[in-house]
Image (cartoon, rainbow, N blue to C red; front, side, top):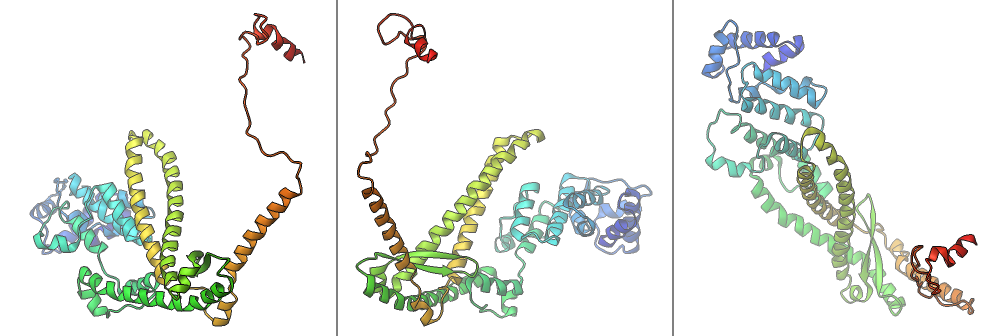
Length: 408
């Protein structure tokens, strides 16, 4: 039936008669393909009519619609047309639409999280379960409502070994510890349990290396300027951006650089949260303006705002966690050679600038000894035009001194 849909799209995608003709042609030519009883009867009719099916046949044959369409809206229109000639029950139509949407979004490069969110919001499918949770109680099912969501979950959990290897490098900064065959066969939960200690050991080794690289500079600065500086600024980079981490100089020296790792974790966490929160507030402002259009669609703007803001906050938490883990895992000192490390004078230069600025401010105040000190501004009560004049004449202010002020 997938071939029948493809042939219909190639011949005349606007004609239901062409669609029915191709479905009947391929159905009768290949009768032993496991069709349902109602579809067999539909094939035998001279002028077949839809029979209210909610089975998953509409979803099985819909994929060509997503490949031919130039937009998501067109894919949805084609998918609906391909379904309603037989499966005109709402569940049958939704099954075809959800499948087509998932294929089209994947085709244009949408992430699996974006596809999951779109299907859940638009078609009210629950895609939060994992395959490990589905398998124990799942059995053969022909309805769209009880088979299409599970099929989409299979796609969402499908494993891509090459993508996994690249993700290990870009996120954790280390090579994949698994062979491709083992990765594809083993369950996700088992892979996670085995991967965590490997990644964590790699992270601890990286922190130790950072401490060893930073300690010579910390030792020199502490011995030469320890009486002047309490903190030292240490730059870290992930290859895209650089963040200066403030660490206590004395404690870094006493722990031989181990305090640098703790300050690195604190500083990066706070910096990522701060930046992500600013972006979230901007997104919330945009959402507040855009939901006003929901009233034109006979929807409650407040309800839409609550739902979308919850989704935005959920995405914020995921983004914060991912960015923190990525920066901590691949972040490093931007200077690698010993000679260059000794020339890193960021903490010293910053402290001098700060001290010089205060001295200049002090000298500036001394150069103007006759200048009066700042005093608080006192606001006196203003007399109203119709209030009694303060002079005691008994007249209204506008007819007494107020008139004189107006004349001036």
